[in-house]
Amino acid sequence: MNPPAYSALCATFTRLYRYQHLGAMVGWDQATMMPPGGNTARGAALAELDVLVHRTLTDPMLATLLQVADDEALDDTQRACLREMRRDWVQASALPARLVEAKSLAGSRCEHAWRTQRPQNDWQGFLANFHDVVKYAREEARALSQTSGLPPYDALLDKYEPGTGSATLDVMFGDLKTWLPGLIRKVREKQTEEPLVLAGGPFSIESQRALGVAIMELLGFDFSAGRLDVSTHPFCGGVAEDVRVTTRYSENDFLRSLMSIIHETGHARYEQGLPRETLHLPLGRARSMGIHESQSLSFEMQIARSPAFLALIAPTLRKHLGAQEAFEPEHLARLCTRVRPGLIRVESDELTYPAHIMLRFEIERALIDGDIDAADIPALWDEKMMAYLGLDTCGNFQDGCLQDIHWPTGTFGYFPSYTLGAMYAAQYFACIRRAHPGLDAGLAAGDLSPIFDWLNENIWRQASRWETVQLLQRATGEVLNPGHFRRHLQTRYL
Image 1 (cartoon, helix red, strand yellow):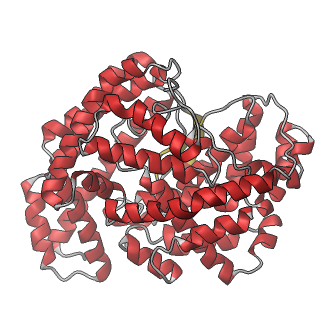
Image 2 (cartoon, helix red, strand yellow):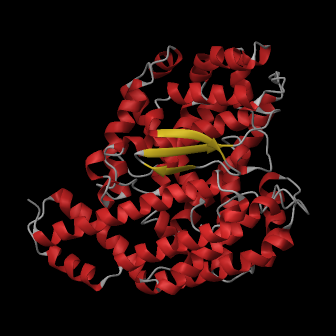
Image 3 (tube, helix red, strand yellow):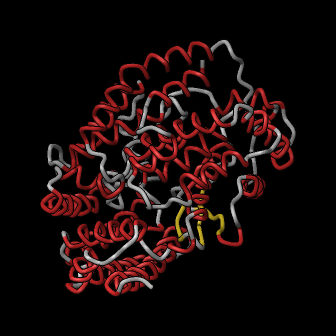
Protein backbone atom coordinates (compact mmCIF):
# COMPACT_ATOMS: atom_id res chain seq x y z
CA MET A 1 0.00 0.00 0.00
CA ASN A 2 1.31 3.41 -0.95
CA PRO A 3 1.00 6.23 1.62
CA PRO A 4 -2.20 8.28 1.07
CA ALA A 5 -0.76 11.54 -0.28
CA TYR A 6 1.60 9.68 -2.59
CA SER A 7 -1.30 7.47 -3.76
CA ALA A 8 -3.37 10.54 -4.57
CA LEU A 9 -0.47 11.99 -6.54
CA CYS A 10 -0.11 8.74 -8.50
CA ALA A 11 -3.82 8.89 -9.39
CA THR A 12 -3.47 12.45 -10.68
CA PHE A 13 -0.36 11.72 -12.71
CA THR A 14 -2.01 8.62 -14.18
CA ARG A 15 -4.82 10.89 -15.38
CA LEU A 16 -2.24 13.29 -16.82
CA TYR A 17 -0.52 10.43 -18.64
CA ARG A 18 -3.83 9.55 -20.30
CA TYR A 19 -4.36 13.14 -21.39
CA GLN A 20 -0.84 13.20 -22.80
CA HIS A 21 -1.50 9.88 -24.54
CA LEU A 22 -4.41 11.45 -26.38
CA GLY A 23 -2.39 14.56 -27.21
CA ALA A 24 0.45 12.48 -28.64
CA MET A 25 -1.82 10.48 -30.92
CA VAL A 26 -3.74 13.53 -32.12
CA GLY A 27 -0.45 15.31 -32.72
CA TRP A 28 0.82 12.37 -34.78
CA ASP A 29 -2.34 12.47 -36.88
CA GLN A 30 -1.91 16.22 -37.37
CA ALA A 31 1.57 15.65 -38.80
CA THR A 32 0.76 12.64 -40.99
CA MET A 33 -2.89 11.98 -41.88
CA MET A 34 -4.95 15.11 -41.19
CA PRO A 35 -6.33 16.96 -44.24
CA PRO A 36 -5.05 20.56 -44.42
CA GLY A 37 -8.45 22.05 -43.73
CA GLY A 38 -8.56 20.49 -40.30
CA ASN A 39 -5.57 22.35 -38.86
CA THR A 40 -7.35 25.32 -37.26
CA ALA A 41 -9.78 23.12 -35.37
CA ARG A 42 -7.06 20.61 -34.52
CA GLY A 43 -4.80 23.35 -33.21
CA ALA A 44 -7.62 24.64 -31.01
CA ALA A 45 -8.33 21.13 -29.71
CA LEU A 46 -4.67 20.52 -28.86
CA ALA A 47 -4.40 23.91 -27.15
CA GLU A 48 -7.48 23.05 -25.09
CA LEU A 49 -5.86 19.77 -24.08
CA ASP A 50 -2.63 21.56 -23.15
CA VAL A 51 -4.63 23.91 -20.93
CA LEU A 52 -6.38 20.94 -19.31
CA VAL A 53 -3.03 19.31 -18.53
CA HIS A 54 -1.73 22.61 -17.18
CA ARG A 55 -4.82 23.15 -15.04
CA THR A 56 -4.50 19.65 -13.58
CA LEU A 57 -0.80 20.16 -12.81
CA THR A 58 -1.36 23.54 -11.16
CA ASP A 59 -4.35 22.59 -9.03
CA PRO A 60 -3.60 23.95 -5.53
CA MET A 61 -4.38 20.52 -4.08
CA LEU A 62 -1.40 19.08 -5.97
CA ALA A 63 0.95 21.46 -4.16
CA THR A 64 -0.50 20.33 -0.83
CA LEU A 65 -0.14 16.65 -1.74
CA LEU A 66 3.49 17.15 -2.78
CA GLN A 67 4.23 18.79 0.55
CA VAL A 68 2.48 16.08 2.58
CA ALA A 69 4.07 13.26 0.57
CA ASP A 70 7.49 14.69 1.42
CA ASP A 71 6.90 13.63 5.03
CA GLU A 72 5.50 10.19 4.23
CA ALA A 73 7.47 6.96 4.56
CA LEU A 74 8.52 6.46 0.95
CA ASP A 75 11.12 4.08 -0.41
CA ASP A 76 13.90 5.24 -2.73
CA THR A 77 11.95 4.53 -5.89
CA GLN A 78 8.92 6.43 -4.64
CA ARG A 79 11.21 9.31 -3.63
CA ALA A 80 12.58 9.39 -7.18
CA CYS A 81 9.04 9.46 -8.57
CA LEU A 82 8.12 12.28 -6.18
CA ARG A 83 11.17 14.21 -7.43
CA GLU A 84 9.94 13.93 -11.01
CA MET A 85 6.37 14.84 -10.04
CA ARG A 86 7.63 17.97 -8.31
CA ARG A 87 9.71 18.89 -11.33
CA ASP A 88 6.60 18.77 -13.54
CA TRP A 89 4.63 20.81 -11.02
CA VAL A 90 7.32 23.48 -10.68
CA GLN A 91 7.60 23.96 -14.44
CA ALA A 92 3.84 24.07 -14.96
CA SER A 93 3.27 26.43 -12.05
CA ALA A 94 5.71 28.93 -13.54
CA LEU A 95 3.47 29.44 -16.58
CA PRO A 96 0.03 31.10 -16.76
CA ALA A 97 -2.70 29.15 -18.56
CA ARG A 98 -3.06 32.04 -21.02
CA LEU A 99 0.55 31.54 -22.16
CA VAL A 100 0.21 27.76 -22.44
CA GLU A 101 -2.78 28.16 -24.76
CA ALA A 102 -1.28 30.98 -26.83
CA LYS A 103 2.02 29.15 -27.30
CA SER A 104 0.25 25.96 -28.39
CA LEU A 105 -1.94 27.80 -30.92
CA ALA A 106 0.99 29.77 -32.33
CA GLY A 107 3.07 26.62 -32.76
CA SER A 108 0.28 24.72 -34.52
CA ARG A 109 -0.39 27.63 -36.86
CA CYS A 110 3.28 28.21 -37.69
CA GLU A 111 4.18 24.54 -38.17
CA HIS A 112 1.20 23.88 -40.43
CA ALA A 113 2.03 26.84 -42.69
CA TRP A 114 5.74 25.89 -42.62
CA ARG A 115 4.95 22.63 -44.42
CA THR A 116 4.12 24.54 -47.60
CA GLN A 117 6.30 27.61 -46.99
CA ARG A 118 9.48 25.56 -46.80
CA PRO A 119 9.22 23.97 -50.27
CA GLN A 120 8.23 27.42 -51.63
CA ASN A 121 11.34 29.00 -50.03
CA ASP A 122 8.96 31.52 -48.45
CA TRP A 123 10.85 33.08 -45.56
CA GLN A 124 8.72 36.21 -45.39
CA GLY A 125 5.51 34.21 -45.25
CA PHE A 126 7.00 32.03 -42.52
CA LEU A 127 8.14 35.07 -40.55
CA ALA A 128 4.59 36.37 -40.24
CA ASN A 129 3.65 33.37 -38.05
CA PHE A 130 7.07 32.89 -36.50
CA HIS A 131 7.06 36.25 -34.74
CA ASP A 132 4.35 35.00 -32.38
CA VAL A 133 6.19 31.72 -31.77
CA VAL A 134 9.28 33.65 -30.71
CA LYS A 135 7.28 36.08 -28.59
CA TYR A 136 5.68 33.30 -26.56
CA ALA A 137 8.92 31.31 -26.31
CA ARG A 138 10.66 34.34 -24.83
CA GLU A 139 7.79 34.84 -22.39
CA GLU A 140 7.98 31.17 -21.39
CA ALA A 141 11.75 31.43 -20.93
CA ARG A 142 11.39 34.49 -18.67
CA ALA A 143 8.69 32.82 -16.58
CA LEU A 144 10.68 29.63 -16.12
CA SER A 145 13.78 31.69 -15.37
CA GLN A 146 12.05 33.55 -12.55
CA THR A 147 11.10 30.26 -10.92
CA SER A 148 14.35 28.35 -11.50
CA GLY A 149 16.88 31.14 -11.18
CA LEU A 150 18.45 30.01 -14.46
CA PRO A 151 19.15 32.39 -17.35
CA PRO A 152 16.16 32.45 -19.76
CA TYR A 153 17.66 30.25 -22.47
CA ASP A 154 19.01 27.82 -19.87
CA ALA A 155 15.51 27.54 -18.44
CA LEU A 156 14.38 26.20 -21.84
CA LEU A 157 17.39 23.88 -22.07
CA ASP A 158 16.40 22.50 -18.68
CA LYS A 159 13.08 21.27 -20.11
CA TYR A 160 14.94 18.87 -22.39
CA GLU A 161 18.23 18.15 -20.66
CA PRO A 162 17.91 18.88 -16.92
CA GLY A 163 21.12 20.05 -15.32
CA THR A 164 22.90 21.03 -18.53
CA GLY A 165 23.26 24.76 -19.08
CA SER A 166 24.83 27.08 -21.64
CA ALA A 167 28.10 27.22 -19.72
CA THR A 168 28.51 23.44 -20.05
CA LEU A 169 27.61 23.56 -23.73
CA ASP A 170 30.03 26.41 -24.38
CA VAL A 171 32.85 24.28 -22.97
CA MET A 172 31.73 21.21 -24.91
CA PHE A 173 31.37 23.01 -28.23
CA GLY A 174 34.52 25.04 -27.58
CA ASP A 175 36.47 21.80 -27.24
CA LEU A 176 34.90 20.40 -30.43
CA LYS A 177 36.01 23.46 -32.36
CA THR A 178 39.64 22.81 -31.39
CA TRP A 179 39.89 19.39 -33.03
CA LEU A 180 36.85 18.59 -35.19
CA PRO A 181 37.70 20.86 -38.18
CA GLY A 182 41.18 19.33 -38.41
CA LEU A 183 39.77 15.81 -38.22
CA ILE A 184 37.25 16.59 -40.97
CA ARG A 185 40.08 17.84 -43.22
CA LYS A 186 42.20 14.74 -42.58
CA VAL A 187 39.33 12.37 -43.24
CA ARG A 188 38.29 14.12 -46.43
CA GLU A 189 41.87 13.99 -47.70
CA LYS A 190 42.02 10.28 -46.87
CA GLN A 191 38.70 9.59 -48.57
CA THR A 192 39.79 11.21 -51.85
CA GLU A 193 41.94 8.10 -52.30
CA GLU A 194 38.98 5.77 -51.70
CA PRO A 195 36.77 5.26 -54.76
CA LEU A 196 33.07 5.73 -54.09
CA VAL A 197 30.54 3.58 -55.92
CA LEU A 198 27.19 5.35 -55.94
CA ALA A 199 23.89 3.50 -55.84
CA GLY A 200 21.89 3.90 -59.03
CA GLY A 201 18.22 4.71 -58.63
CA PRO A 202 15.43 5.39 -58.92
CA PHE A 203 14.20 3.34 -55.99
CA SER A 204 10.45 3.06 -55.67
CA ILE A 205 8.85 4.25 -52.46
CA GLU A 206 7.22 0.83 -52.06
CA SER A 207 10.57 -0.97 -52.17
CA GLN A 208 12.14 1.56 -49.79
CA ARG A 209 9.28 1.11 -47.35
CA ALA A 210 9.64 -2.68 -47.47
CA LEU A 211 13.37 -2.29 -46.84
CA GLY A 212 12.70 0.02 -43.90
CA VAL A 213 10.24 -2.42 -42.35
CA ALA A 214 12.72 -5.28 -42.72
CA ILE A 215 15.48 -3.28 -41.00
CA MET A 216 13.10 -2.16 -38.23
CA GLU A 217 12.26 -5.80 -37.59
CA LEU A 218 15.95 -6.68 -37.50
CA LEU A 219 16.46 -3.91 -34.94
CA GLY A 220 13.72 -5.33 -32.74
CA PHE A 221 10.87 -2.88 -33.37
CA ASP A 222 7.55 -4.34 -32.20
CA PHE A 223 5.00 -3.76 -34.97
CA SER A 224 2.21 -4.98 -32.73
CA ALA A 225 2.79 -1.80 -30.72
CA GLY A 226 3.73 0.70 -33.43
CA ARG A 227 3.80 1.57 -37.13
CA LEU A 228 5.74 3.36 -39.88
CA ASP A 229 4.30 6.33 -41.82
CA VAL A 230 5.33 9.41 -43.83
CA SER A 231 5.62 13.00 -42.61
CA THR A 232 7.20 16.27 -43.74
CA HIS A 233 9.94 15.89 -41.12
CA PRO A 234 10.87 12.44 -39.75
CA PHE A 235 9.94 11.90 -36.11
CA CYS A 236 9.07 9.29 -33.50
CA GLY A 237 5.80 10.03 -31.74
CA GLY A 238 2.82 8.38 -30.15
CA VAL A 239 3.24 6.70 -26.78
CA ALA A 240 5.26 3.80 -25.44
CA GLU A 241 2.38 1.37 -25.96
CA ASP A 242 1.78 2.60 -29.52
CA VAL A 243 4.93 4.13 -31.05
CA ARG A 244 4.60 6.01 -34.34
CA VAL A 245 7.71 6.27 -36.53
CA THR A 246 7.72 8.49 -39.63
CA THR A 247 10.14 9.10 -42.47
CA ARG A 248 10.22 10.83 -45.85
CA TYR A 249 11.31 9.30 -49.16
CA SER A 250 13.34 10.34 -52.18
CA GLU A 251 13.31 7.99 -55.15
CA ASN A 252 16.88 9.01 -55.97
CA ASP A 253 18.33 8.58 -52.47
CA PHE A 254 17.46 5.42 -50.52
CA LEU A 255 19.83 6.34 -47.67
CA ARG A 256 17.72 9.38 -46.74
CA SER A 257 14.76 7.27 -45.69
CA LEU A 258 16.77 4.27 -44.46
CA MET A 259 18.93 6.23 -42.03
CA SER A 260 16.01 8.32 -40.79
CA ILE A 261 14.04 5.12 -40.16
CA ILE A 262 16.95 3.61 -38.24
CA HIS A 263 17.38 6.84 -36.26
CA GLU A 264 13.71 6.96 -35.31
CA THR A 265 13.72 3.23 -34.53
CA GLY A 266 16.33 3.97 -31.85
CA HIS A 267 13.88 6.41 -30.27
CA ALA A 268 11.10 3.84 -30.65
CA ARG A 269 13.01 0.97 -29.03
CA TYR A 270 13.68 3.22 -26.02
CA GLU A 271 9.97 3.94 -25.69
CA GLN A 272 9.04 0.28 -26.18
CA GLY A 273 11.66 -0.70 -23.59
CA LEU A 274 10.44 1.62 -20.82
CA PRO A 275 9.12 -0.24 -17.76
CA ARG A 276 5.42 -0.92 -18.25
CA GLU A 277 4.71 -0.94 -14.53
CA THR A 278 5.52 2.77 -14.17
CA LEU A 279 4.67 4.15 -17.63
CA HIS A 280 1.74 6.08 -16.18
CA LEU A 281 4.03 7.97 -13.80
CA PRO A 282 6.85 10.48 -14.41
CA LEU A 283 9.24 7.83 -13.07
CA GLY A 284 8.54 5.64 -16.10
CA ARG A 285 9.25 8.15 -18.85
CA ALA A 286 12.45 8.70 -20.82
CA ARG A 287 15.16 10.38 -18.71
CA SER A 288 15.89 13.36 -21.00
CA MET A 289 16.03 14.29 -24.65
CA GLY A 290 19.82 13.95 -24.64
CA ILE A 291 19.39 10.37 -23.45
CA HIS A 292 16.60 9.90 -26.00
CA GLU A 293 18.86 11.13 -28.80
CA SER A 294 21.60 8.85 -27.51
CA GLN A 295 19.32 5.94 -28.40
CA SER A 296 18.59 7.17 -31.93
CA LEU A 297 22.28 7.88 -32.49
CA SER A 298 23.30 4.54 -30.99
CA PHE A 299 21.17 2.97 -33.70
CA GLU A 300 21.98 5.29 -36.60
CA MET A 301 25.64 6.11 -35.99
CA GLN A 302 27.11 3.47 -33.69
CA ILE A 303 25.30 0.48 -35.19
CA ALA A 304 23.96 1.30 -38.65
CA ARG A 305 27.05 3.00 -40.08
CA SER A 306 29.44 0.35 -38.77
CA PRO A 307 31.02 -1.92 -41.43
CA ALA A 308 29.82 -4.98 -39.53
CA PHE A 309 26.14 -3.98 -39.62
CA LEU A 310 26.33 -2.82 -43.23
CA ALA A 311 27.77 -6.21 -44.20
CA LEU A 312 24.87 -7.82 -42.35
CA ILE A 313 22.16 -5.86 -44.19
CA ALA A 314 23.79 -5.83 -47.66
CA PRO A 315 21.76 -8.88 -48.80
CA THR A 316 18.57 -7.20 -47.57
CA LEU A 317 19.35 -4.11 -49.65
CA ARG A 318 19.93 -6.26 -52.73
CA LYS A 319 16.67 -8.10 -52.10
CA HIS A 320 14.56 -4.94 -51.93
CA LEU A 321 16.45 -2.48 -54.14
CA GLY A 322 18.10 -4.77 -56.65
CA ALA A 323 21.61 -6.16 -57.01
CA GLN A 324 24.28 -3.59 -57.80
CA GLU A 325 27.92 -3.03 -57.00
CA ALA A 326 27.15 -0.22 -54.54
CA PHE A 327 25.51 -2.76 -52.23
CA GLU A 328 28.64 -4.81 -51.76
CA PRO A 329 29.71 -4.41 -48.09
CA GLU A 330 32.94 -2.53 -48.82
CA HIS A 331 31.25 0.01 -51.10
CA LEU A 332 28.25 0.32 -48.78
CA ALA A 333 30.53 1.11 -45.83
CA ARG A 334 32.28 3.84 -47.83
CA LEU A 335 28.96 5.28 -48.94
CA CYS A 336 27.59 5.42 -45.38
CA THR A 337 30.70 6.97 -43.88
CA ARG A 338 31.48 9.50 -46.59
CA VAL A 339 32.31 12.87 -45.04
CA ARG A 340 30.95 15.70 -47.12
CA PRO A 341 29.66 18.99 -45.69
CA GLY A 342 26.02 19.40 -46.63
CA LEU A 343 23.17 21.81 -46.10
CA ILE A 344 20.68 19.45 -44.46
CA ARG A 345 21.19 18.48 -40.81
CA VAL A 346 19.25 15.21 -40.85
CA GLU A 347 21.22 14.00 -43.89
CA SER A 348 24.63 15.00 -42.51
CA ASP A 349 27.52 12.65 -41.92
CA GLU A 350 28.74 11.83 -38.45
CA LEU A 351 31.66 14.27 -38.47
CA THR A 352 29.97 17.40 -39.77
CA TYR A 353 26.73 16.91 -37.81
CA PRO A 354 27.96 18.72 -34.66
CA ALA A 355 28.59 21.86 -36.74
CA HIS A 356 24.88 21.95 -37.60
CA ILE A 357 24.04 21.77 -33.91
CA MET A 358 26.52 24.46 -32.84
CA LEU A 359 25.07 26.79 -35.46
CA ARG A 360 21.51 26.29 -34.23
CA PHE A 361 22.47 26.51 -30.55
CA GLU A 362 24.21 29.83 -31.04
CA ILE A 363 21.35 31.32 -33.07
CA GLU A 364 18.50 30.22 -30.85
CA ARG A 365 20.27 31.32 -27.67
CA ALA A 366 20.77 34.79 -29.16
CA LEU A 367 17.12 34.80 -30.27
CA ILE A 368 15.69 33.85 -26.87
CA ASP A 369 18.02 36.22 -25.04
CA GLY A 370 16.84 39.06 -27.28
CA ASP A 371 20.25 39.73 -28.82
CA ILE A 372 18.76 39.20 -32.30
CA ASP A 373 15.25 39.30 -33.76
CA ALA A 374 13.59 36.62 -35.87
CA ALA A 375 14.26 38.63 -39.04
CA ASP A 376 18.01 38.45 -38.33
CA ILE A 377 18.17 34.64 -38.51
CA PRO A 378 18.91 34.17 -42.25
CA ALA A 379 21.95 36.48 -42.29
CA LEU A 380 23.35 34.87 -39.15
CA TRP A 381 22.64 31.41 -40.57
CA ASP A 382 24.48 32.25 -43.79
CA GLU A 383 27.46 33.59 -41.85
CA LYS A 384 27.77 30.58 -39.57
CA MET A 385 27.15 28.02 -42.31
CA MET A 386 30.02 29.51 -44.28
CA ALA A 387 32.28 29.70 -41.21
CA TYR A 388 31.58 26.15 -39.96
CA LEU A 389 31.01 24.18 -43.16
CA GLY A 390 32.15 26.45 -45.98
CA LEU A 391 28.70 26.36 -47.61
CA ASP A 392 26.71 29.19 -49.18
CA THR A 393 23.03 29.39 -48.14
CA CYS A 394 22.31 32.98 -49.20
CA GLY A 395 18.69 33.12 -50.36
CA ASN A 396 18.23 29.36 -49.84
CA PHE A 397 15.82 29.36 -46.90
CA GLN A 398 14.40 25.94 -47.80
CA ASP A 399 17.74 24.22 -47.18
CA GLY A 400 18.79 26.79 -44.58
CA CYS A 401 16.89 28.16 -41.62
CA LEU A 402 13.52 26.69 -42.70
CA GLN A 403 14.71 23.08 -42.80
CA ASP A 404 13.85 21.93 -39.25
CA ILE A 405 10.50 21.52 -37.53
CA HIS A 406 11.85 22.59 -34.11
CA TRP A 407 11.66 26.37 -34.43
CA PRO A 408 8.22 26.50 -36.13
CA THR A 409 6.81 24.54 -33.18
CA GLY A 410 8.63 26.67 -30.59
CA THR A 411 10.94 23.86 -29.50
CA PHE A 412 13.85 26.08 -28.46
CA GLY A 413 16.59 24.46 -26.38
CA TYR A 414 16.26 21.01 -27.93
CA PHE A 415 19.06 21.07 -30.53
CA PRO A 416 22.01 20.58 -28.11
CA SER A 417 20.44 17.22 -27.17
CA TYR A 418 21.67 15.79 -30.47
CA THR A 419 25.37 16.34 -29.81
CA LEU A 420 24.99 15.35 -26.17
CA GLY A 421 23.27 12.21 -27.44
CA ALA A 422 26.15 11.43 -29.82
CA MET A 423 28.59 11.74 -26.93
CA TYR A 424 26.48 9.60 -24.60
CA ALA A 425 26.19 6.95 -27.34
CA ALA A 426 29.96 6.84 -27.90
CA GLN A 427 30.43 6.37 -24.17
CA TYR A 428 27.90 3.51 -24.08
CA PHE A 429 29.63 1.68 -26.90
CA ALA A 430 33.07 2.11 -25.36
CA CYS A 431 31.61 0.33 -22.33
CA ILE A 432 29.84 -2.35 -24.38
CA ARG A 433 32.99 -3.09 -26.39
CA ARG A 434 35.03 -3.51 -23.20
CA ALA A 435 32.53 -6.13 -22.05
CA HIS A 436 32.22 -7.74 -25.51
CA PRO A 437 35.53 -7.58 -27.44
CA GLY A 438 33.99 -9.63 -30.26
CA LEU A 439 31.06 -7.25 -30.71
CA ASP A 440 31.69 -6.47 -34.38
CA ALA A 441 32.09 -10.11 -35.39
CA GLY A 442 28.84 -10.93 -33.63
CA LEU A 443 27.12 -7.96 -35.25
CA ALA A 444 28.21 -9.06 -38.72
CA ALA A 445 26.74 -12.49 -37.94
CA GLY A 446 23.43 -10.93 -36.89
CA ASP A 447 23.84 -11.04 -33.11
CA LEU A 448 22.68 -7.67 -31.77
CA SER A 449 21.76 -9.04 -28.35
CA PRO A 450 24.82 -7.70 -26.46
CA ILE A 451 23.86 -4.17 -27.50
CA PHE A 452 20.15 -4.47 -26.87
CA ASP A 453 20.64 -6.30 -23.56
CA TRP A 454 23.02 -3.59 -22.32
CA LEU A 455 20.73 -0.74 -23.39
CA ASN A 456 17.70 -2.47 -21.91
CA GLU A 457 19.36 -3.07 -18.55
CA ASN A 458 21.21 0.22 -18.21
CA ILE A 459 19.04 2.77 -20.02
CA TRP A 460 15.58 1.60 -21.08
CA ARG A 461 14.48 -0.14 -17.88
CA GLN A 462 15.94 2.65 -15.72
CA ALA A 463 13.65 5.27 -17.29
CA SER A 464 13.73 8.34 -14.97
CA ARG A 465 14.77 6.49 -11.84
CA TRP A 466 18.05 8.44 -11.78
CA GLU A 467 19.15 11.94 -12.65
CA THR A 468 21.10 11.99 -15.94
CA VAL A 469 24.53 12.22 -14.30
CA GLN A 470 23.73 9.29 -12.03
CA LEU A 471 22.28 7.26 -14.89
CA LEU A 472 25.44 7.71 -16.93
CA GLN A 473 27.73 6.92 -14.00
CA ARG A 474 25.82 3.77 -13.11
CA ALA A 475 25.76 2.61 -16.75
CA THR A 476 29.33 3.40 -17.78
CA GLY A 477 31.25 4.03 -14.56
CA GLU A 478 31.94 7.69 -15.29
CA VAL A 479 30.28 11.05 -15.94
CA LEU A 480 30.06 12.35 -19.51
CA ASN A 481 33.49 12.00 -21.09
CA PRO A 482 33.63 13.61 -24.58
CA GLY A 483 36.93 11.81 -25.16
CA HIS A 484 34.98 8.68 -26.10
CA PHE A 485 33.27 10.55 -28.93
CA ARG A 486 36.59 11.82 -30.26
CA ARG A 487 38.19 8.37 -30.10
CA HIS A 488 35.18 6.81 -31.81
CA LEU A 489 35.43 9.25 -34.73
CA GLN A 490 39.19 8.87 -35.05
CA THR A 491 38.96 5.07 -34.95
CA ARG A 492 36.16 4.79 -37.48
CA TYR A 493 37.36 7.40 -39.96
CA LEU A 494 41.16 7.30 -39.71
